[in-house]
Amino acid sequence: MKSIKLQILQTLYEQDFYAWVEQTAELLQSHQWDTLDLEHLIEEVVDLGKSQQRALQSALRLVLSHLLKWKYQPERRSHSWRLTITRERLNIDELLQESPSLRRFLNDAEWINTTYQRARREAMVETSLSEDNFAIACPFAVDEILDLDFYPNAEE
Image (cartoon, rainbow, N blue to C red):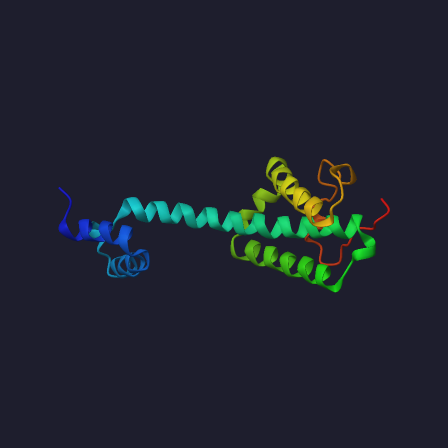
């Protein structure tokens, strides 16, 4: 039978997530292991890892879509595009510094391709260019994508 404290904590998870987080942190700090809502705690730890992966993918998608715009619309290049590319490259670098194990996603061709296809679609919508203008496979190497000084030429 569940303890009353555990039942209260589980109810708190459903009704006030932030209060659940605070209470769970207190229980962890005071080593009250038997009172922890382990089911939800495990779920949140897994979700935390997923959110790091989503952050990496989001930053990568932004870099890729802006590199595509840079490559295929040279006449529209702007300081704003360069700023976005730089900011998101730095965000990727920070994520990789904090969580080096995320780098494995950058070595996963399928993961890169999925991210590239989303960036490609985004660039098509934003530029109003047809899909025939954009490479089907990612035209950039991971090292180029992450290189703060890399900007593709329009003529390739």
